Length: 215
Length: 145
Image 1 (cartoon, chains in turn cyan, blue):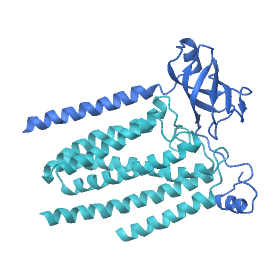
Image 2 (spheres, one colour; image 1 turned 30 degrees about the vertical axis):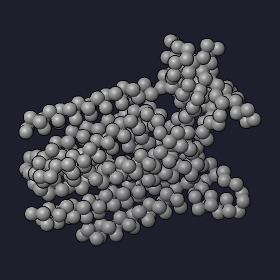
Image 3 (cartoon, rainbow over the protein chains, first blue to last red; image 1 turned 135 degrees about the horizontal axis):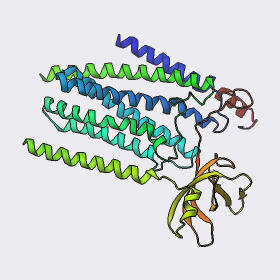
Image 4 (cartoon, rainbow over the protein chains, first blue to last red; image 1 turned 180 degrees about the vertical axis):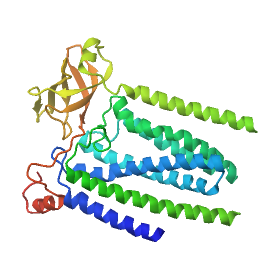
């Protein structure tokens, strides 16, 4: 099952590359730099999903004290941090030629950096407490609270004046992009989602084995 | 023991709340509009000014790197001067955010120019050029665009 997921993700990523470089057109205003979007937007999508999973799994853990839910939350938080990092890195590389700056403190970039630091703190908290039960309990509370950041990041471009543009795809009133760009994005969304699921399955298994070995 | 953790947790929560509050309120007014600047300009104060580059206002002197243009929000315009090269996406009828200060001589002296990108994406007019085709053209020496 997990192996099939891995192969599907690999095929999806290959198809995503072909779509991004071979099928999607050079964007009229930005030129080829726009192709970074095919990494940037799916990355942040996966980060949102990963932190939403942390949120749900944390609630389940607090309600039922199921060890498995804690493992899912832990693994998903790690992946969320990874993909948020990818989002920030790719955004920065895009920002320099497009905006003229690697970084600027507008509401979108500020809120996403807070998101990043909060979940780094989540992982730090887990690592600092030795007793498994207590680490899981405290982490679960933080996992619920930190999720408040997700809407803050996503809607920051509507709520405040920002340099970052509002969404082109996940927005009210439909997408503002030609179909072929949307198609290339959707393939990469699917590929990144599969990759996330694959990593999650692997990491949860690893955490289970670690827990068994420690017991 | 428990009290210590509650106190520690409260400190962390307060610190995070402050970070979010300070971060967001500071960048909440990421830039002021030309109307807002015109309403209460303070000479020498650092501003970020955002608006549309007014069509016909852009002057660019490649030798001296002198750049001048006007930023508009439809109600007010502010003349801006800058020394340096603007980003690729900078141009007339496009959004821009500039960092700098208001001068006593009645213009905005910009130290940094940022191009604001819109959420609109378009396929090129020459009919769907992919990176593969671009590479081949570049290798054949036909230029990039």
